[in-house]
Image (cartoon, rainbow, N blue to C red; front, side, top):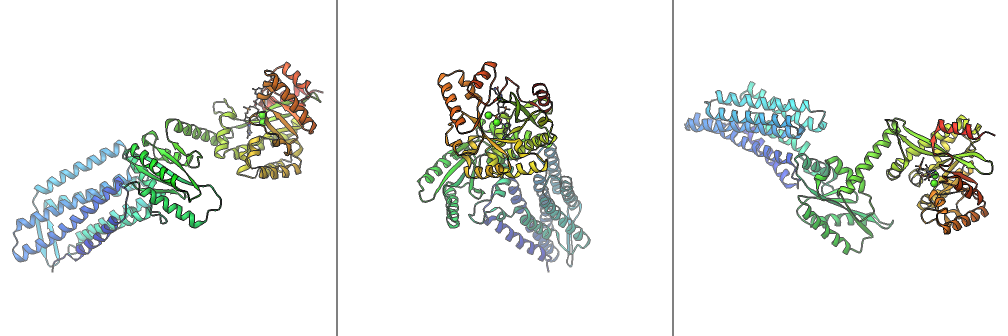
Amino acid sequence: MMNIELQCCALFILSVVSAMFLCNKKLDLMNRSLYVKALVICFFCLIFDIGSVASIYLSVYHGLNETVTKLICKLYVMILVAQGYMSFNYAATGIMSRNKGSKILQGVYLCIFFAGEIAMAVLPIDFFMEGREVYSEGPSTSVAYLLAGIYTLSTIGIALACRKQISVRRFLSVFLWQAIWLLAAVIQFLIPGLLLIGFASAFGMVVLYIQLENPSEFIDNETGAFNAGALSLYVKDRYRYERRFAFFTAKINYITDNVDLAMERNTVVRTVKGMSELGPEAVFRISDKMFGILYDDAERMQECMKFLKKRKDAVTDVPAKATYMLIPDSDKLSGPDEFFRFLHAYENEQQEITVADEETLQRMRNQNAVRDMIDLALKEDRVEVFYQPIYNAAKKKFTAAEALVRIRRKGGGIVPPAEFIPVAEENGQIIPLGIRVFEKVCRLLAEGTVQDLGVECIDVNVSAAQFDNENPSKFVLEYVRKYHVDPQQINIEITETAVNKNKKLLLSNMDQLIDKGISFSLDDFGTGQSNLDYFVDMPVVNIKFDHTFTQAYFKNSKVKHILAGMADIMHNMDMKIVSEGVETEEQLKAMLAINIEFIQGFHFSKPVPEDEFIRFLKENNRD
Ligand code: C2E
Ligand code: CA
Ligand code: CA
């Protein structure tokens, strides 16, 4: 009886894994092609394993020519080593980062491999058979065992050394796979009748398949497209092996609120179908409503994207519009991180097509740099509040001040809000930033110093974006309570943009705060299209004339009449006016002449840090 049951069993297992692997659609990942090679070699190895046992049997019992048997045995050990090398290569490429050191290491192993193969080819080999004990022996076989041992131990060693850089899962599977192989080799060495090595190899391929190479894990169930995990893996792979690519995404944006689940599902499935029909390239589902295709060259991507857009534009039965993102050249982005940052940053862009060109990428990089700066400043408490005194014409002293945010650079310099407020408004950092400013203002008021020096109220700016995400009245009241601040001492400045955004929400927030005693001003009046209804039904006590409006008063006689007329109207409505941007004595006089109640501007003081503000009050607010 030939000792080949285990090998036949292994052959069967390997066939099943190969069939499963081949049936599923896959991405052309570099590492995956190494897996295919390992699979093929494992196959040959098993065949020659069986072949060598069979030929030894035939030589011993049926007089087969010994030279033929030795040749087959030699081929077997040579393929066995090739398999060890392939396994090492597969594991090492998946694990090690691609640097010069790892390339040299892989080169060394390749040399060892060739040297070993030549040695095995020229060195003599022998075989032995007695009952179920059957094996090849001699110098050639010893070289095979030595090399197989080196590859296995090296693979385990690399997995251990790089375990911090790789996922636990990859580590465990590579470790398990090699440990099984090593264990089998040891057992086979001790019990020569138990031919385990072939079986262990096949079993290892199963472990790898289940853990690392199972393609169905990367398929989106609903549409059959590749999922976001697959995209992440694929994009990393393309960057890693410097395989330049182009990419485009299409996103569904419903233009009505009543979209039911069935329609949503249908649209998603139709989109994937439409995209699959563009060509053989894989379609990815990146998020619920966003899909993408990766191409080898930009021209083809442009063509397909245009074709898809044309088809989409012809669809009239779905209440949705599509937006597209185009990445014509992956090399323009620094790597997978920036690739996904781009997708994330422009995912909700309103314009129909966003292209990852130099300008857009530069803007994104700037925004990221600013975002990081804000984050760090918040963490390291370098967000400061400057105060600009506001002159009260009736009382002839400074009874108010506007709180203006600044970021202190590590070196001591100051970043003006124009450089970071727009970014913060866009990415939501305005929420923590606004809270920090408000807390600092409350702290100042809690000390009571500025009130003793004549200040009745501090103006705080609140952005439109702060009304969007969070209920602003919540944090305002929280800090007012925490620091025992008199709400009458706080005035909140809002702009038209806030009014435009969500008037109902804004009004309800304002009402809550007004109830508690906080007052409001309408900021930046005279910029944009200052519609009258912005303040007609707004419960604001002050209107702030923007500095461009104030300045225009002195340059343009028509504006002079408009501003004076506006001032009259507002006074008749019992509102008070703050003129911003008053820079000269002459401008001050002119504003006082038309009965503007409050004056703010460089003429009195620019915005200054807290201690300077207190000094200013001490000098200028003497009775
Ligand atoms: P804003 O609310 O209109 O603030 C007045 C701006 O005018 C301030 O600029 C101030 O320095 C400047 N200014 C004051 N007097 C004069 C003058 O005589 N001539 C001229 N040309 N300009 C004058 P700043 O401090 O750079 O702030 C810019 C904008 O940033 C603010 O405009 C406001 O919209 C925003 N901002 C500042 N702090 C905050 C904050 O804490 N939260 C929010 N959401 N926005 C803030
Ligand atoms: Ca303001
Ligand atoms: Ca203003």
